[in-house]
Length: 61
Image (cartoon, rainbow, N blue to C red; front, side):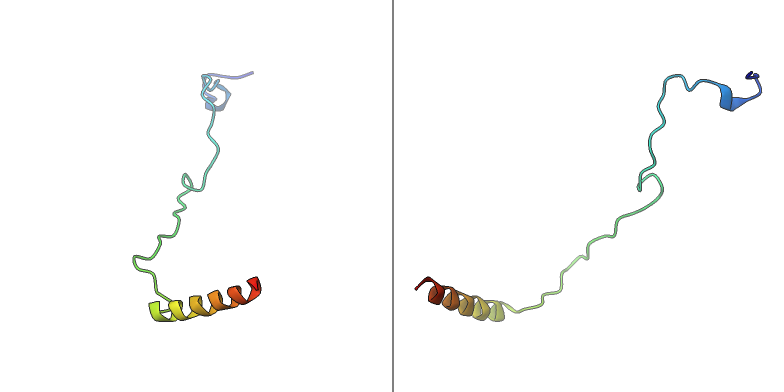
């Protein structure tokens, strides 16, 4: 039997308990860096693309 002094025995008044989420537990997603480091220069990208394009043209023949 439940007594008036037992707070766990009271009904929850129909309010469902929400599941724990990473955000509710204090987890914060890492922030993306403000500027991205470039691996290749524009010239290197153009040279690589031209070489790839030539290779694709040879495959079409």
